[in-house]
Structure formats: C-alpha cells, structure tokens
Length: 332
Image (cartoon, rainbow, N blue to C red; front, side):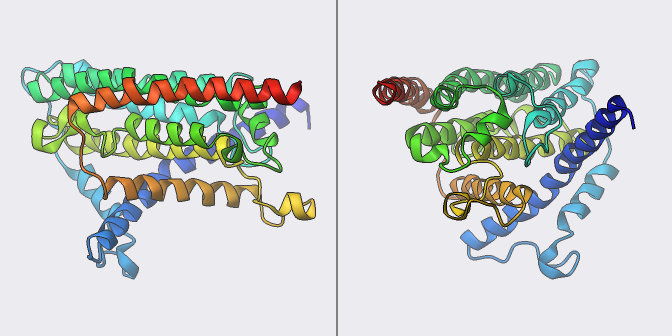
C-alpha cells in the first residue's frame, strides 16, 4: 500500500478516535458528576433510567433536549444566536487533535502543539460573547462580558504555568513532552506549576468557584439564558469537553501522559497500554474538578479578578524564575 494511503488511513482512524472521545466522554462525565455530587450530599444520584445506577440517565436527557423546541427570541440576532454554540463546540473539538492519547496515538503531532491548544481554546470565549450579544438579553450579555474578563485574567497565569514545563522539556510538541517524562513526571519537578495550571484551568472552564459567567443566583443562566433544545445541549457538552481537555492537558504536561507510573523506572518496561493510563490519570483530574465544584462556594467578581492578577500571575512568574535558576545550576 502506498505511503500516502497509509498516512491517510492513519489520519482517518485518529480523527475517528478523537471524534469518539469527544462525543462519548461528556455523556459519561455528566453521569459521573451526578453520582459524585450525590455522594457528597448524602444522596444516591440518578438510579432509575437504564437499571444499574441510572447509567442511561444522560442519554434520556439528551433525547429530551433533542425533542425540545428550538426558540430564537424575537429581538435576537438570529445568525449570531445560531453561530455561538457551534463556535464553542468546534473550538473544543479542534484542541483534541493534538492531544497524544498514547504512543503515536495522536491525530496531528504539531511541533507547536501546546501553543496551538492555548490559542484555539481561547476561541471559546468568542462563542460565549457572541451568545451574550446575539441573544439581546441583559443577563446573557453580562455573562458574556464576565467570561471575556475572566479569560483575560486567567489565560495569562495558565500560559505562564506551562512555561516551566516547556523550559524543562525544550519543546512545544505534545508527544515529545510525554516522552521526556518516561521516568519522572513533571509534577515532581513542577509542583507549583501544576497547582497554578489546575486553578487556572478550573477558572478557564467556568467551573465553581469561578462560574461567574453563568451564576444562576445573579444572571439566571448567564450567557445561555435564551438557549433551549440542542443549542443549549451544545453549550452543555462544550463545558464538559473543555473540562476533559484541561484534564488531558494536565495529564500530558505534568503526569506523564500514557506512561505507566514507576514501572519503566523499576522494570524498564510498561505492563498496561498507554491509552489505559492516559484515561486513568485524566479522570482522576476530572474527579478533582468535580470535587472542587461541589465543595467550594462561588467567588465574588472583584475577588475573582484580584485572585488572578494579584496572586496567580506573581506566583507564575516566581515559578518561571525558580525553574530557570535550577536549570542554570544543573547545567552549570
């Protein structure tokens, strides 16, 4: 078979894998969050639909949203109202194309993969602001403006927090960053960077305690107040895809990706497939995201901004300086 066809076949399979993960993971994550929240609140969570622990509840909710009427407010900008959820979902999907799920199990291993993710994930806020403006609703507009301000405040420490990893790995290529962690994950070398990345990622995904753009007690439902049916489902799915992306990035950058913990160092080989370890580590971080959501209260807007600009950014710069000094000392 010609090399061109082999490469094309590989790209199609990789794209199908990414699409499958993108489509199916939110279904499981929504069910998982309901069970986690129920456990933390001494409840059972969904138990009826599908039999065992209500595992089909999310599918039932998806069918319900699919059958709901798609309403566009009379004074809304119909084009922007339709376009916003597509932008949000598409931005989430495109980021997964450069995430290495295992050894060479990646759709496109770009030499600027990390920069690509940071750039494309920022496009999400364009869809959110578009939803706020196009809905012609004051609550939706305030939610969109809050989202833009929050992105500016937390995209900076998020980008700075991964600079330590880039300095140690010497590359922006996601696959090579995983290879550099074959024996020692970067969370050992960059604990402060990992903590800053985790906090910034929670804020970037608009999760509690940073869910100001869609604060129900203040803005009804925030930027998707005027959305119903499948358009609302698009925003809902995009939120969980963004959370999965943030956790996948944390796994690749700090937890060694699909590398098995300790066994390569002790035995020189890996016993379980990288894909298994990638999803185990990713879903551990997903659980942390859910744990934080159902444990902490929502921040006030001014404190949200202060925390990003006055706390996270200075510590991110301190982490970069400290990493540079250590590298300088080690290299002599």
